[in-house]
Amino acid sequence: MSEEDLEKLQDTDLGADLLDAEKSTESEIIDFDQNGRLLKIATDGISVLDYVKRMKESDILVAVDGEIYLDGPQNLINKFNMEEGDEAKWLLTFWRDGEVFDILLTSPIQSKFGLATEEETTWALDQFKTHTFGDFESYQNFEIFRDKNSVCDILSMEKDPLASLLPLLWCLKFRLFPPFAALAAAYLVTFFINIYLFIITYLVLSRFFSVSQQNILRSFSVFAGKSHYMTIASTNENDVSAIIKKIDIKNKIRFEANAIKKPTVIHKVIVNNSSVAEK
Image (cartoon, rainbow, N blue to C red; front, side, top):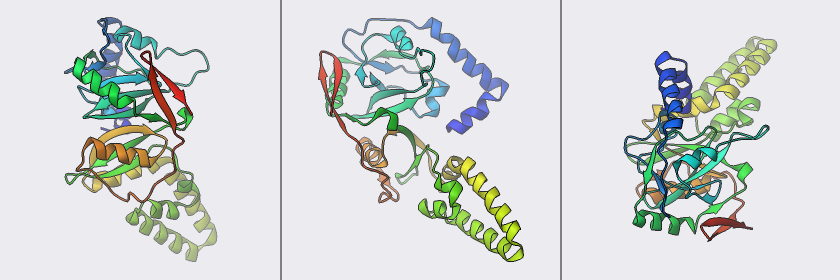
């Protein structure tokens, strides 16, 4: 289920009831002292909102906005409080299968938490020491779709202006050959029929690709036999690729040469159970 599927779910009575039920559990959160251990998503504790982003039971929460979190489940809710004018955007860092990764949330996390073991906490914190952050404002979520052969597509969830200006080039950029052929045919036919019809067609199709580009990318990944595997926040595609291959060495990235940009790296060290950023 993608985030687009979630929006459709919210439009149904059943979906609205499920999401309302999850939100109502915030006041029923059982608080406890972490005693220096990290929080871990509990068995049967994953929420619909978090499942859509492909979080998993047993994912270990290491940090919120770059700071190690050890203050208990109840205070975690307070981390999502906003003042007027603040942007709903939080960067959560998790540990899974020996690798640390980030995920960008625009709404509070709804899952229930238990405690990681002391051994898991040690592993996660040791891995976090080598974790690097880029410019917070540059983070975006990437959706990873994987097939049965562990071949992955990395899809950016940011709008690409090329889709609205030059849809043909946008299709070539992502190797979407069927829509490229359909666009080229539509342009050629309308151009030879009437120049004004060509202009109208170009504008309409540009608008369509601008609005639907994320759904188009998802659809062609699903058409290729892939399913939503993970959501990872990063400033660039290269870092996402590295994380995916560390989580599972069998994972391979399709069109890996399509690197987007170099990361702006900020090195972190841990001091007194908190993280300090140093350029």
